[in-house]
Image 1 (cartoon, rainbow, N blue to C red):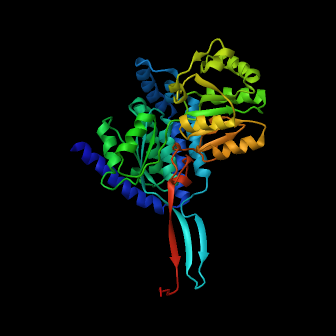
Image 2: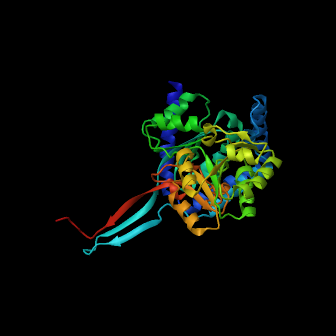
Image 3: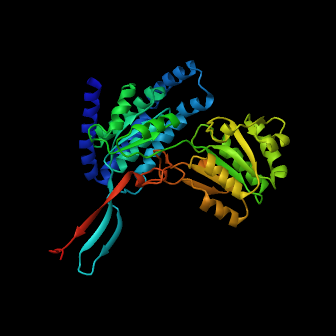
Length: 419
């Protein structure tokens, strides 16, 4: 009963805060964001100390390197969080923006405007920086949020949330606008998914398949799905060899633990003997494990045999599945079968082939001659993101300010009545 009562009180407080935020002027919200950034900088040592506790616990569990990379907050990453808050403050406020305006012949005036969604519950796992990104994006878009981070990043996320709430206080905004669920009990997630008696309007899960599957199964409120990033780079027969190598290395290895990392490389049979050996050699030189089909293994003695499961796996590690395809049609079919509708890229000089790929691949983000690691709200100019939505309704791709609003219609008449 205590957990239920406490969670319900958080939801009710968030609902009241959301009503106040919906009316808050842009200048006040921006002041809150800038105060948050200043507080994060002032408390860098405190955040780093909290992060060290999380890292020590993770190392005792002997987690893999890519997991630690997602968890670690260096001084540069803490500074990047502060800069992200400032970038969001500099963006246009979506609330109240006019989306469409028209007038009927009888003078009845119609306007469609952006409005906040309300209260957003965000459930995420090991990335503590999500705390800052989610809190800031919700504030600027006029939404209150309930944050439920993973136990792996509990101390880091709590320290960051403290900075955000202090920034709210300095700006005269309700501290209940950003609340951190403090209990590790899984029942707290269940209560959020039920909606806290109508006080949560939207759930955003950000994590692995098991988390997203649970949210989609149990949620009683709308969900922005953020599925795994089983992303592909496809090298077309017309690709420039040097460009293809550079893009593959960046897409796979810039950061292996992010959702925009490439997990499968597809290569046209026509160019594989000429292009693939140098790419695989460069990957091996950077300690990347290759799992390939028979044609790949014939070109690379170090490659391991791939299973069908490899084509469907998000490794989040220095492992790459490599498959030789007959043509673009087979590449698109492979992505449709094994991909997660997240981010997929083609490397090609043939513009017709590139346009076909961009049109026919059904993913939230498709790229031509660019790394999949551009799947990031900051790179899109959104300041930050809550995640990459892979569903088809309301939001798709990086979820930033605009995606965290809905709309309503305002009609203005002069005594109009309907016949």
